[in-house]
Image: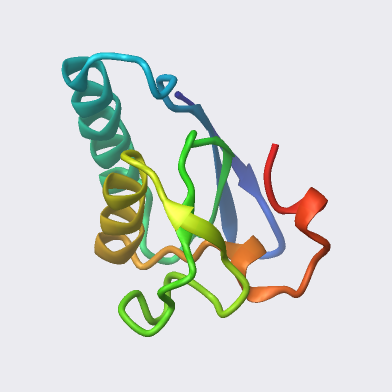
Length: 112
């Protein structure tokens, strides 16, 4: 995990977090540690900052946007995998949204 806090105009700041989650085959201990570290880092971001989280979470979050309203848009992809719930829960707890799911994109541009 890496973070950078950049000044914007006036007294505004943007915090950018770059992250790469453990691969699917990693142990639950490694995955849990990753999300604990991410939660701790997100807790340090000031509420008034603009927040951007970038990276690869190795998660397929599916299409159930009615359950994850405000987090997941109507253009998700496929079904969920084992990494989806921790990501969706983290987004819900920290009021983050998965921006690609809010845009109608070709399937090849939704996943890597």
